[in-house]
Length: 166
Image (cartoon, rainbow, N blue to C red; front, side):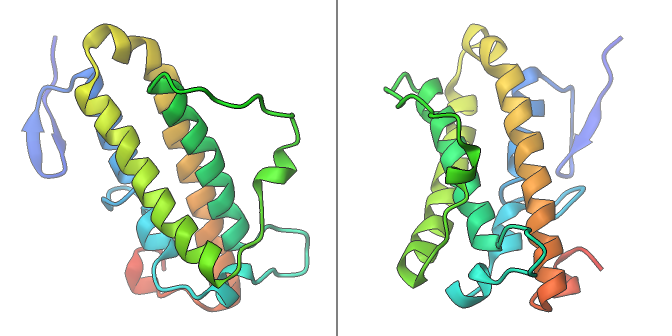
């Protein structure tokens, strides 16, 4: 039995493509169950992005750099581009930012997440089926770190609860 669901205000019978796109978009720029990444990083200065609470947690800037690193790797793999071998040190993916690199990282994250959505939109069923597990994990990973970004911003006092999390 097929079930129709409401996705971003539209009723439709879900497909693998529609489910994956909904996940990607809700962790990128479409508020749904939680705050998307674009909202989570909006309006921060490089100084705010580098702030740490002193307990060993990552800064917002480091979290964004980490998301850029892993999302870009996965997108390039999906697109058949050469991807450098990973040295296994995940700590290196949490790079600090300055004013220029912060602005670049925010823009790049948006572009990469858009690229992932475009990949899913254009993928045929066979390609999509092969990539589905990775795409679902990308969405979960992005949601997890976006939650961390909001937590850090709340600790810092730079989060506006009107943006979605009270």
